[in-house]
Amino acid sequence: MDTDRAALVICLTLFIVIGINAAIYVSFRRGEGVRQVDLFRQAFKTARQPWKSEDDALKELSDLVSDIKERSSSPEDSSDTISSPNNP
Image (tube, rainbow, N blue to C red; front, side, top):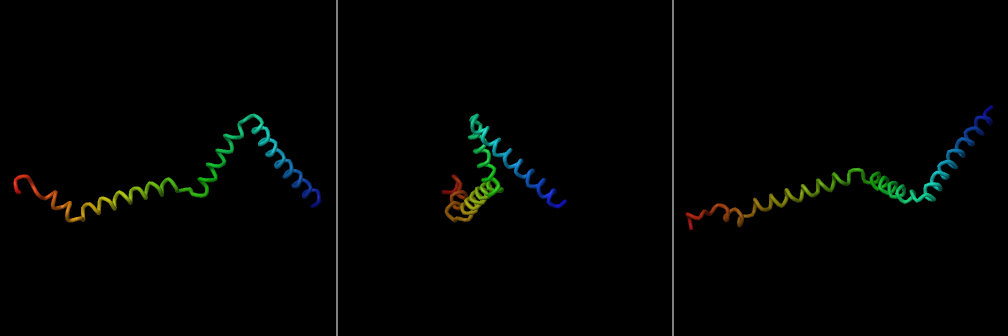
């Protein structure tokens, strides 16, 4: 009885694998394979770095904040902004 179940599992697995390979082959023959490959590449890239876009945005924000802090802490910039045209 266990051998029957094992044979069934093996047959189903082979059927699924052969079916997936046949679908991939047919899609390449029709020319749709290139789009699917690009889709898979993008999915794998996203899976490897799921928060890349957020990290890039936070890095840009951090750079902008540090630039603002540097500008506000430098003495040259503050003396230029304090002087008015009435006080030479």
